[in-house]
Amino acid sequence: ASFVLPLGYSFNLDGSMMYCAFASIFIAQAYGIELSLSQQILMLGMLMITSKGIAGVPRASLVVIAATLPYFGIPEAGLLLILAVDHFLDMGRSATNVIGNAVATAVIAKWDSGEVPGSVAEAVAE
Image 1 (tube, rainbow, N blue to C red):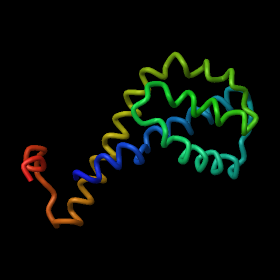
Image 2 (cartoon, one colour; image 1 turned 135 degrees about the vertical axis):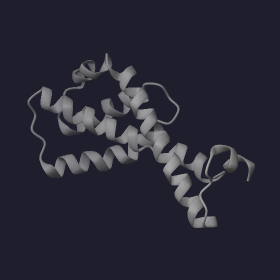
Image 3 (cartoon, rainbow, N blue to C red; image 1 turned 90 degrees about the vertical axis):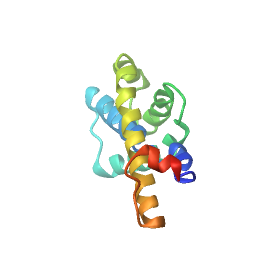
């Protein structure tokens, strides 16, 4: 757990990547821009890599989205559509990241020792 959790905090950012992908596709749909399946898959791959710098930086997802939009021909002005709700969606994004890190830590603990701690106190005591 002492190795997996810090590593997961930096690299296991599932919620951040999903938010950036959903926001980018939403902006494209709001402007009436159709993205092919290959473009959407490329966007997901690009956001998987670029979302690694989001950890611990408030509103950093907006910078990542702003860097991604021009590559797909989507106007950057569409960021204003999500700017107002980004603060509230950040809470859900953080919760998804924390749950992903907790699951990864539990799985690694199970593989390592064969037992999953029943509580946080048991995990800390070990």
